Amino acid sequence: NAAISACEKVGKWQKALQLFSAVVQSNLQSDIITFNAAISACEKGGAWIEALHLFGLIAQKHVKSNTISFSAAISACAKDGQWKEALELLRAMAQNEVECQMTTTFCAAISSCVKGGEWNVALQLFGVMKQAKAALHTIVYNATISACEQGGHWEKAFQLVSLMAQSKLELDVITYSSVISVCEKGGEWEKGLHFFDEMTRSKVESNTIIFSSTISACEKGAEWHKALDLLGMAAEKRVELDMVACSSAISACEKGSEWSTALHLVSVMVQNNAEFDTIAFNAAISACGRAGAWEHALQLFSQMAHSSVELDTITVNAAISSCEKVKWEQALSLFGVVDSSRITFNAVINACEKAGQWAKALQLVSVMLQSSVDLDTTSCSNAISACEKVCKQEEALQLFHIMARANWQNFAKTVTGQLQNK
Image (cartoon, rainbow, N blue to C red; front, top):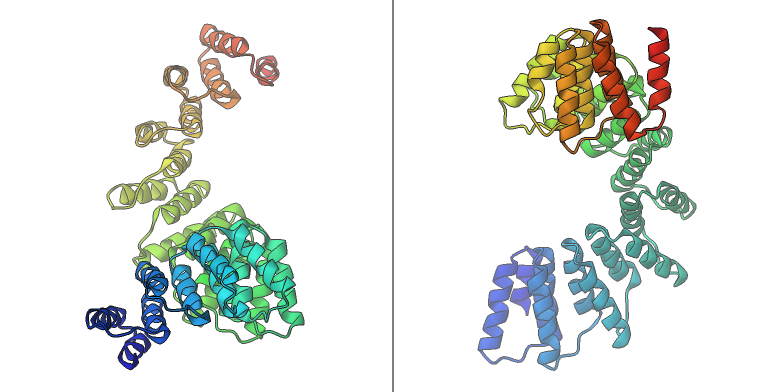
């Protein structure tokens, strides 16, 4: 027992299992201390399957399990998100009338539900703890706020933070990280900044995740100046930012129509040899396009195509949009790089319309009709406009009749207005 406990304390769960096997093979009488030490060793090593196997052997060996046995097994389940097994163990505790240390055991069960994506069950367990007037420590609140983050319940998360303050519990870096992430996902950028400022005043050390979540919250609110302030603060604190933060800052500038600033951020990232991911590339290409820097956008697209980073529809759409006003040939060459969406078709048709390439525009409309991509008013309006520029009246009317037969809402009104203006 002492040897297995020593292995448990230093994280040697495989060695603990070897010793446990030696006990069985030697026909020595295993007691609950033997089992608990071995289960705890597996729990600390993240070996939940082995932990549950050992727990199952307790009854087979006619040994009575206790609070420590159940708690260690539930904690093992929590580390791998095995929420169903954790709940079964909780039920077994109640059925066997084993004393439950709610703060520890239920917290582990809540964590298992959060990791398993069962945020609703996690909130229910917290409710049970509250009704039972169990001691609710910071670690319990943190796990429950994480559940709120998963479920997008930002109001509930704020209530929990308020309860922590009323109970005079200290908010730590995990608390702030979770609640700011809730704000970011819920589009509550002002509240996200509030919690970030509160964290700074409380002298809680921030980290990469917190900066990324706060900058992402600013991006959703197009608060580019706040995003830039946070970038500067991270640099001062020597917090290394990830691609999520950098991409969000670029997108914040783009949404705030600060395209030159976004372009500057892209340049800084390139100079620092930053390894762009798909999201970062997309944000950068889109920002370049809006800033009118189509050559830079295409350069980034080319860099992305020759790297291991995966291209997606957003990438192609952003690249096409960046050059649709000045380089229709480039826009057309990008078409078909990935499966095209309606936005992709519309961007290329728009490029053809601006260049007076009516035949290409009609060809693209034809492809749309033959494929599963739905035409919309933008598609046909741009194609009709391309025909109008070179006096192709028959083609324009043909497109109009196609749309009329489809009986699409508002299309007749849109096109009639265009024809009257001509």
